Amino acid sequence: MGATIAIYSVKGGVGKTTLAANLAWNSAITSGRKTLLWDLDAASGAGFLLGVAPDAGKAAETIFTKERDPAKLIRPTAYPKLDILPADESLRALDTQFLTIGKRRRLAKLTESLGKDYDRILLDCPPVLNEISAQVLRAADLVIVPLPPSPLSARALELVVQQVQAGGKGHPPILPVHSMLDMRRTLHREARDANPDWPAIPYASAVEQCAVRQCPVGTFAPNSPAGMGFAKLWLAIERQLAKVNKA
Image (cartoon, rainbow, N blue to C red; front, side, top):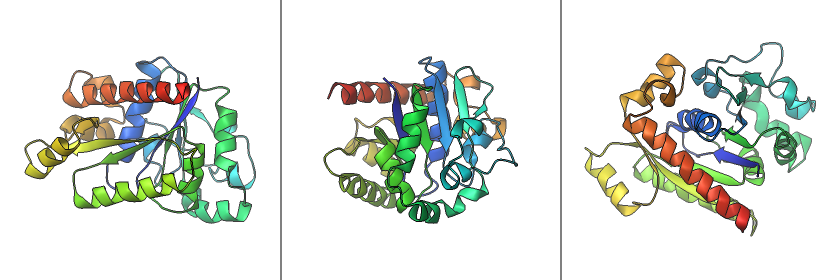
């Protein structure tokens, strides 16, 4: 069954976009699923990591304000079964635009429509706590929360949990992920020991190389700790989605 997966945190600098791009690649290449990576962050990092620039003549916000068909803005990537709906500067006012539109399930309706053509839709979400995040949580079947080990990250998770639970009984499940995990550091080891069942992505040069090479880790270092970490995380996501579908 199709599913929408949100990669979301209220805190920036946690590796969210790198996670989204690598998970989308694993969805398409490892699982062979037709996958759409939808970048909702005006910084447009997801497209950069996959080597796809937004079309200057097609502002991303028109999907919401003018109800332009999202399919007209979708771009193919260099990888089979993986497409991207890139972001651009026009999304900086998306929170206000959502409030003006007044449709609480606008994003959910769009993902449901796109789900007819894609097995997996991954949302790279901006680090905000407003109507954008509320729209994301109404659309998502699963929420992935990257958490570098720190007190601020723990607080960020609390805020995400509170907002998700505020949605009522039908809220999506949350899967926290240790990101940028460096087992040489005491704080990181303690965080891992406190939540050993959470998937983990290590702090590694291969992850940093994604931005340099503009491609996912799996394309150049699939057997590295980072490459295997992304692959294991994707399998954990697929297992979680299977549980959701059975519920």
